[in-house]
Image (cartoon, rainbow, N blue to C red; front, side, top):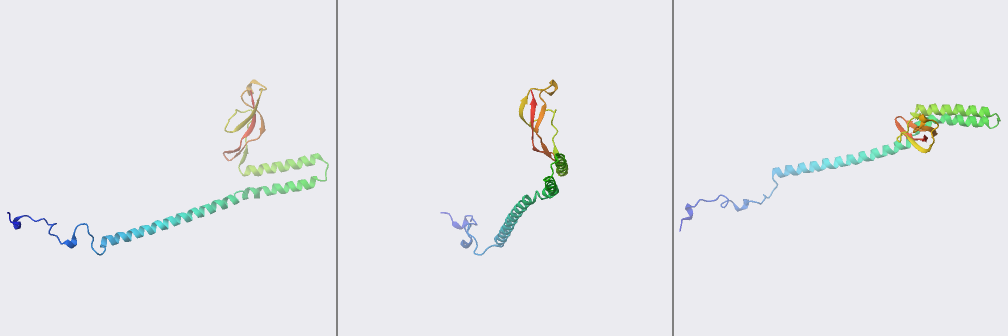
Length: 178
């Protein structure tokens, strides 16, 4: 038999059993303590960010609701003088039998209303005699064209169309020549 003293020894076999592989030391190592502190710091940051985002969502929702409530305030304020004119014209024309006075008061108020709406960005569509465009017009009927040059074109306008800025807010209802 060979002598056991002459065989090379493996360092792992002769190591202290208290420090066996796979076992942790009794107390936390400095690296584990730093990692735990970093993890707690990141959790805190995450929770603060989540709370800040929730507050942002709540605040913007509240601002949006407030904006919808007061969005028409500027337009309504601009239309109040027109309403006042209607009331004065109605009171002045109640006792008169003169149709011209009534027509004149209505024309004055109509012009004032048109100018007020135009100042707020409303523009009337000019469609009569032009080409039909499905993005701007709504064809309600077709009639025989009075002349060959009006064939396939807009012959009559039943209801005006309007732009608010560059956006169509009401399509013009038109009659096409066939």
